[in-house]
Every structure is written in C-alpha cells, then in structure tokens.
Amino acid sequence: MSCDHRRLSDLGSRRWEGPSLAWATLPSASEGPLMEITMRPMKFYIDTHDHRSSTFPNGISKEQFADFFASYEKHSREEGTIVLRAHVGLDDGRAYCFNMAPSAEHVRRAHEKAGLPFETITEVTTATPGDLSFEPRD
Image 1 (spheres, helix red, strand yellow):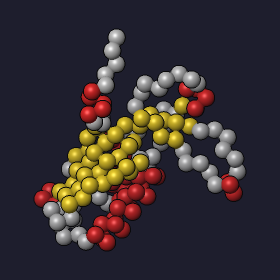
Image 2 (cartoon, helix red, strand yellow):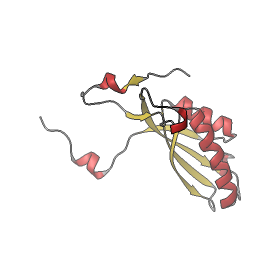
Image 3 (cartoon, one colour):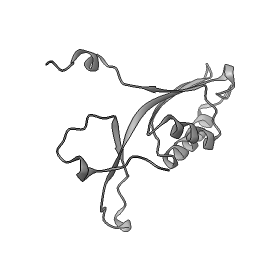
C-alpha cells in the first residue's frame, strides 16, 4: 500500500493545515522502543448500507451484527482505515459507518475483505456549530 507518509519531525513546529492525521499504534514493551512515528493524511468517509438494496442483512440480530462488525474493524485496520463509529437501525435494516482513511479506495477494500456490500462511500467534513461560527478574521 503506498501512502504519503510524513515523519513527525518533518512537521516541526509548523501548524498542520491539511486533513486529519492518524499515526501508527505504539509497539508493546516486548517489541522494543519506538524509533519513529509516521503520520499520514486522513479524510473522513461515511458509507451507507440498506436492506432494500441488499447491502445490509435483513433481520440481523444485535449479536450477529456485533460479530460482523468486529470482522469489518479487523479488515479496516489491515487497510489503514480507522472505524470511528457506526449508526445502525437493526429494525429498519440500515447502517451508516463513519471512517477515517487515506482514500475511499481503502474503505472499499475493507468492506470487500469483510464481505460487506455498500451503497455509497462519501467523503465528508465535520460541520458543527463551532466549525461554522468561528471563522478566522483577516
């Protein structure tokens, strides 16, 4: 997998103006000291699933969903995707997953490995009242 990696030292004291960043998990004590932390630009994505389009299992139980979601999280980590949360309506047969990843392709591959079809994958940005109210002034 090729990604635009940046060393923490490369960022120096400059302010990072790009997308969100994620970094490698720290090794355990038995794996030895951490020599370098790498960071890579990440974007936010929401993917959608709906039983009406056969992208969400109809009638799935909470326990079955938990097992399936654990598999998706595992494959997401393998693809460099961070699953931030999922909003699920089991009774309605719908789910919305919120991920952070280098690209939509990383999210797509994680779904493919988990055997989870999707309707759409959309790049999104956060928009809270704070994000919209506090704009820099010249």
